[in-house]
Image (cartoon, rainbow, N blue to C red; front, side):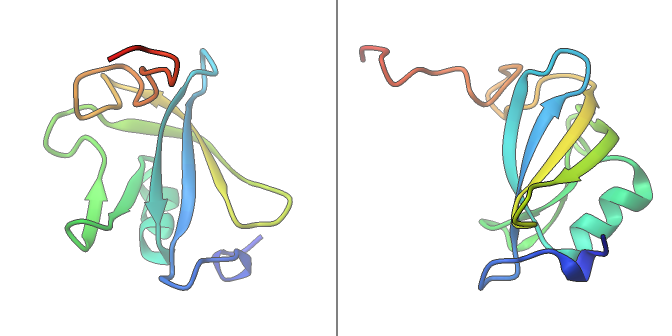
Length: 108
């Protein structure tokens, strides 16, 4: 599979689910474009596309909470990625280990 064979959305992005390779915990979801995907494969650390800042985002470059890439998979439709990583610190900007720490059944 080549990057050009993947199905990117109309904005040139593809969703990437990030999962801890050791525990299987889902850590986060972020967007990649072709450039961030190529950099992720080259550096063996996750690099995403920040939709809010409109720039590349090397996860952990500022915080030190990098994610070392173990394997990058794509789904059957080639329109979603799964990054298996070894995280070096929390994935969420809130400091939580995973961005998925809240439940829809939680009461406010």
